[in-house]
Every structure is written in structure tokens, then in C-alpha cells.
Image (cartoon, rainbow, N blue to C red; front, side):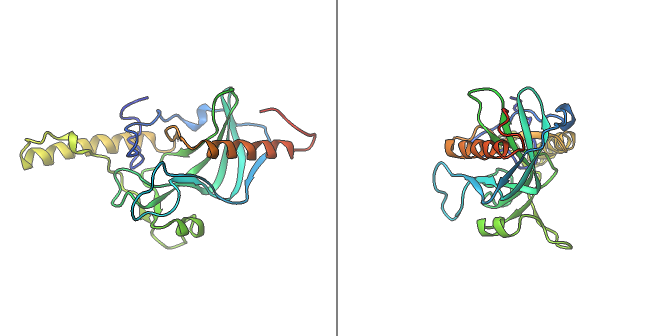
Length: 224
């Protein structure tokens, strides 16, 4: 894990100060698999504890088709159409209670003991909505509408010593902001994973949906 690897605009989570390193999508070969995971309803991962003033799950996958896109020895990537997943409780946004919408999909592992999990594509900013109801009804910005964006700010208070003068603080913040901007540009378009999700039921449901997709293929069951 790289301490600065997320520098992915707002995707530093309040519960975790770092994310796994991003990697190029092209580093994972495209797959010849034909199965499609179809989610008829949202598959959510719940909050470890309630957050005052915020209703709805911590994050999850939206209904739709997740098509097998890439595959390597470790797992299979099923990409959703458009912005297929959402997440809230993000550090660095004007309101951490907003729900940000991401492009990405479902990763299914091939190794025993690993769990299914969401993956997302790094962007300079992410559209966001205020409520879970809007997540379900507005999974993508309407044409001609400028969405509320998750701003690329993850400068922490610890970046500048508490004893610094206002001028030193401004310079320190500017330097930190430049480092963040450079890291964001370097990672845009790459794939990343969320930190470990403790909601076991969420991962089990993704695995079950994958099993149904495989069993539904012509010729019967197919092993991952």
C-alpha cells in the first residue's frame, strides 16, 4: 500500500488513510468470457455505524449489466454501464455526506479465501448527489446539466505545522495541493479498489450473482 497512492481526488476514506496502488487497465488482458452479471436491484454495503443526518448505505453497486471485460490469473473484471457504483463518507469533499458516482464494476477472485469487491476508474472528479434516492434515480448526469463534482482536495490539517504563520500555511497548502494535483493526473484512467469492505453479506451476494451468471451460460456451469 502506498501512503499517497489514493491521491485520487476525494477517495481517501475517513476510515482508512490509504488505498492500494492504482494500476493501468491495459495491464490486465481482455477476456473472452461471455457471461454477464445482471443485478436486478442494488447490492449495498452497509455502514459500520449510523451517521447523523445521512440515510442510505455506505456504498454499493447499482442495478444493471456487468459485462466480463478483463481477466488475469487473480480474477475477472465485470464492468458496469456508465456510473455503476456509489460511495459516500469520503474525505475531501465539500460535504462528505454526499453520494459520489463512479465508473467501474465487480471484481471476482479466482483464489480461495479472496472476496468479491468493487473496482473503480480513477477520475479527476466524480459527480455526486445529496441523497440515496437520487443515487437510484440519477445514476448519470442529464445532458446539459453540470453535476455537483467531488473536488480534488485531500489536503489534511497535518500537512502544515500548527505553529506556521498564515503565509507559511498558504505556501504549505499550495505545495500540498500541487502534489495532489500531479498525483491525480498521473492516476486518471487507472483502476483502483476500495479498502477492505467488512460487510461480508455484500461480497457473498456479488459472488452469488456471478455464480448465477456462469450457470446461465450455454453449455452449463463454467468454473471461474
